[in-house]
Image 1: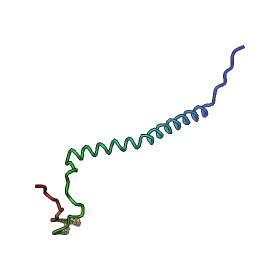
Image 2: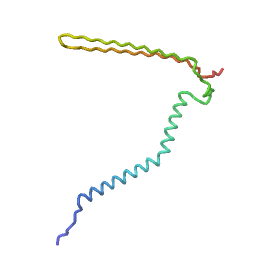
Image 3: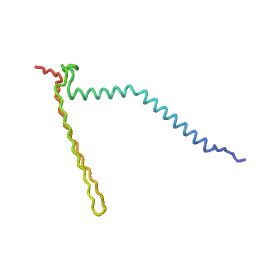
Image 4: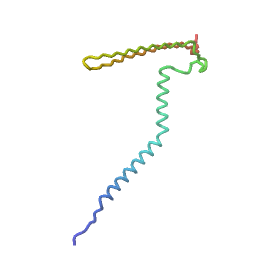
Length: 115
């Protein structure tokens, strides 16, 4: 007598593969969450090393509240031109607008030079 095997429906196979993907994604998410503090420390150390290479901060004598604004100047200029032409029942409107802004600020940041 031949051996009879039962086949599982395709819906069961798809559900099982979907469940396997969900478990895999959950495991990967858990690993990433567990590694979060280590990744954060690594990024912070890279930023600190780069900042120290650019300008060492251990000898800085600048107070954070000693800077103040001495002078500020802002100039704004705008021009606008409008034109209208009509030739053989064709109307042509032209608009030309220009805006320029210039700004200058003078501050004292309270930097102390070491001699």
